[in-house]
Length: 463
Image (cartoon, rainbow, N blue to C red; front, side):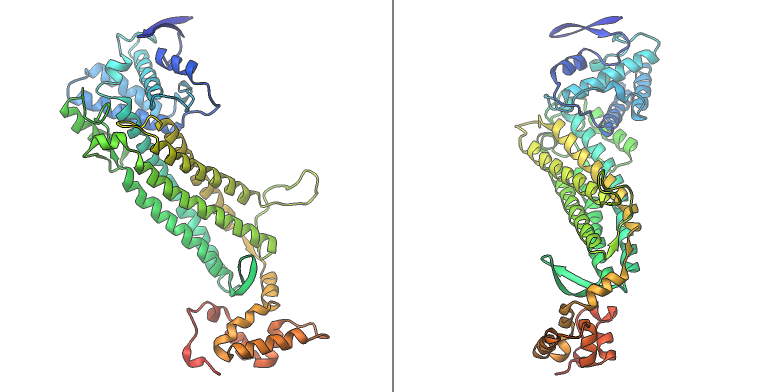
């Protein structure tokens, strides 16, 4: 069974049970570009914005109570995730998000109509545009909804970054007495501790946590009430000042109405700023995961075994969690580049590329948040092979560098020369140093506490 709907372009047949209407159907026919779907986070936030608008219109007396009640109830069900299947549009769509806004208007209207006891498509009961979209435009509703979704995503991302930071801090403490060789440019360098190596990971993630927390401030200004281009045309002043209060109540976020809504409607650079922070986090994830893969290859750490590594090589195990994390971080980094591109291509009073911007930034946040959660448990399971760390350490001539402040460069050079001239004896450089300088001095200088102290004590230098 079908129902007939019409718009300014003509008529279309819509399946009777469909909660979407003619505008959504036209968009479905027009935009068949990918298998991607609208983010559930955006569906939820857009329903929240619609609910806030309805509440404001009810309170200002512009919307009758009976209509408002069923609209609000419909919004609540969408917010709960009960009707996501009725939002089938491809996120790659023209019109600055108009198709998605119309999809939301139609689904809310038809849900409300059913709740009022009528049949889908009977827009005399609740109209998608006159009632659900009252005093709104895609150009203020859609960007505001994206910001609400981003804020919600950043809140979750911040929690997961905190968990990952805690995992690295735990390993920093656990490995604080494990001496090892540091490495620069893929070559052995001077000695350090494994704990110090993990401290660099935890500090980088700590900075990411602070950045994400601070970047929330950048997108709390919204343009809801600005309608088409930020001037508020067609919306009553009482509604414009009230709707932001309702949205703040519903979200719990410290949202404010932008003082210059024309600016907020035309420019998307605040999203680019957030994307830059997400890029920094992605870069840290990629770098840290590569480092952990290298340490695992060297045998200094042991990663948790989570699955078989090969379909042809029995017993092979791969660092698959780290590989997956790197790929997700690379994807999020690319998403952030698209945010910048989409923002830069806006023209005059609106950003017509908001659908791509929203798809990209919300995916970047989701990927990074899931990566952090996955890595948190994986890092906690990391074990150290102290013997391998010690073997690299005791047999590496670069540990002589630690003795420079105490015996000088020339003496260190001579010790190394003698060591390299040994032919018959197979001893470590550490043992050879003990022969030359004594057990106590060598153990003291190569102790974890001395290696990781900030500089050496001047009064202990000898010539």
